[in-house]
Image 1 (cartoon, one colour):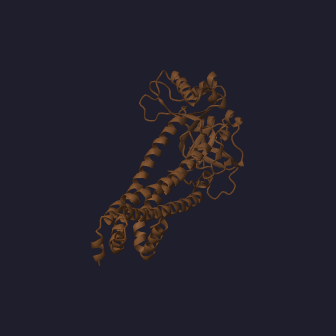
Image 2 (image 1 turned 120 degrees about the vertical axis):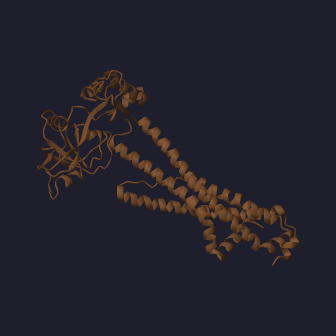
Length: 410
């Protein structure tokens, strides 16, 4: 009996019992489809977050932030301040590095109780540093910082919250913590998390850092200092040494007391790797459970098939077929059955992943569809192995039947 004959036999069996065949293959389809779907979605999510983080600050940004809740902070030594940022800017071995100091806080606005918004004190360099784009008006300039000007640039969504019903916000005034600020610009939508710890650019109000310290902040401490090394420095020292240098410079100014946190791309990469391992383990566990259920279904239908084809088995044995050929026949049928489930699982998982990426792109503006060929191949191979493993017992049972008993079977 050739492979083509066995394939025709399996397809005829599936055609005769469509519902039973679908239920049999459902476990394998779900197992393989889940593996393909989750791997695609997780990889797409990784690229989505990578792009958002790149838009926010880039992959070579080192952030020093105040250690909130630390009893030593502010008692044994000062917290982060502009002198720390100045020391980093003037460090010879960090020559060419961009250093930005950021202050941010939630402040009240308007006259009603409970109305709050997020305000960021920053400098003109933030426009290029974070790849921000101005939709209307202009961004902050150095003169605004020098003059401690009470001007503000609104995020794309902040304007609608602060000035409901105002069609043209430029030139209008907003009141933050009792202080009036004139609106000079509005940013284009950019819903990405910044490295300074504030929520989103779209919902923030940006003011000159000097005006923030003088008119809004309760102290002259900084929430964070952001360092972006130049390509020359990165090539000469490497990112790990740059992180070490940044930590050492600030640590020496704080008398050896680290009352600040350092968040660098190396730690982010390690965290993403650990998260990837955890998600991969969950993917494998879910797929394994579904494949085991599918394997049990395959074993069940193969046992039914052996019972239904007992006389056929007897005839083949009577005309000289060996036990090995009978066993190979049913193992091949089980492999074909599970392989068909694997193919349907790969196609179904890929289709759902593509549709999901389209929906997420409509919701978030960007969500790439990623087909993972390795996971698809692993899923298909696992389906074949499942069919062979769970089809072994029915195949052995068929090969051990007696020809005489088979011919007597009704």
